[in-house]
Image 1 (cartoon, helix red, strand yellow):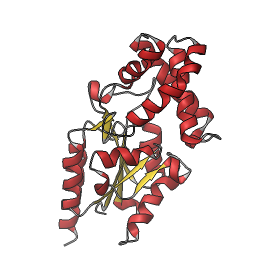
Image 2: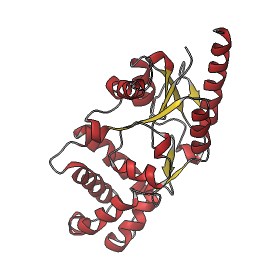
Image 3: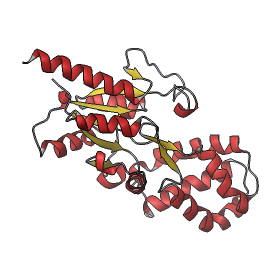
Image 4: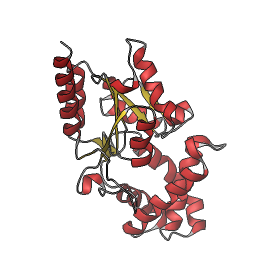
Length: 258
């Protein structure tokens, strides 16, 4: 079957922090918490984020997304060595700044290959959509980066109440696109940087899948987790490789069915 739909993850797939997150956190922390070791912030952020994701999946909690991220930010600062009392006293000023920054192009930028590949896929009559575990601020980011119109639908776990690797996240994108013409899982491809959530999640939904691992600093390391087994995994280094795969597949199958 030819590919009619390509869904993309957001962070580390289509876009990336304009500067490393730990650097941006360090800048915002400094006036309130003093100078903290950026490397400690980097490790503390990853640890705090992973813990909150496990404890409160899909941004659950009485305080919603704001409360969820407040816990991450608080854990990051304390884990990096800031005094807990000072952190508590400063959260009311720190959190709004970080939430605003990571709601726009101030915090994020598109990868150089993102926009050209999205346009080329559309020219090939291949629909493109977003399937992301991000919160609703991602809509603001994509709007500010002038790319939202090329990603329809935009499915965000915060809004739909589920998150990858749940197969329903991927099926929702297929159903939305199918409203304008028939489409099945085997005509869909998902591209993302997380082995479990993106690659295996999409495969479980019956889709083709590609694991995007950009080499060097842009990829933040080609292996995300210790002990990852990428044997037999379809790994690509950039979005141009995705475009070429879709183009070659659709040309070959299109020719074969004439």
